[in-house]
Length: 338
View 1 (cartoon, rainbow, N blue to C red):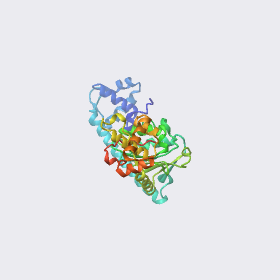
View 2: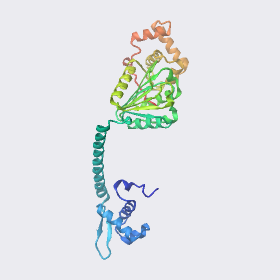
View 3: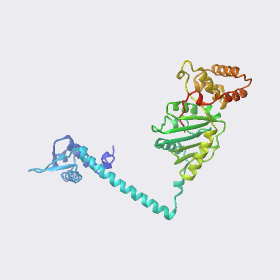
View 4: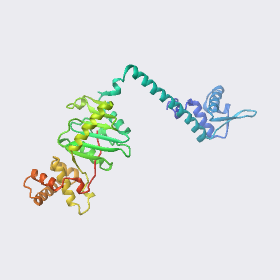
């Protein structure tokens, strides 16, 4: 490791002083020449390091025929040093804010304060992960094909505990293996999932302060925009809420999660997915059922309701309230993906 790349650099200590402090903590006391020999430096260099520690209240000199040095209790002495450094950094942050306000008053906000343009192939997934991991309250997500990040870039990226997640997937795109796997992985993360037949644009909104969307909807690989403008983000939030209200809730409860008496709940779940436009194969994959079992649930429901076609079945099921989650208590939402 580079000698300058040490934890002590954050405290303002030079690398040698930090190493000398560690040495003093490990021994009862040490003289200047002992320190010089231990670290292979000249006596004047050792003297400067010891004086630096004394000036920082991290060590003290023991007078005698040959002066010796001893470390102060680290938790108290280093803690006090860190407190001073934090106070200094806080003053610098205040200064930066004042300078930024003065700069914007003269020149106005820069373009990057309003919108970032990400063009590199690696920039988009990296910025997505950074925004996702630093979100503290809410993530809103509209997902539709084509997907450009894929499984390798999405990985197992998660959000901080307590962050609320809501996702709307376009029905046709939800048959994609990556989006399906992402949603299934999120069922234990407290997210909520809905499906709709058409989404106007791919979009992720982080804490209602930043939004990520492609530069060109038909070619996501051409790059993305990170929007910071409060007015634009508010508009995009309104767009998300409009799509969310029209979308169909979907439960991703797996087959073994239901009690033995849960056949009616499973049938209603299948009917909701069918009404959202999902194909039998996709429903079967999500619920870990066979395609034949899914079709049997649909057939049985049609017999009970007296429906002759799937369209008629969806209408009658909606009229009975079978497509409403409030009736069955089954709610296992999904998390967002890139």
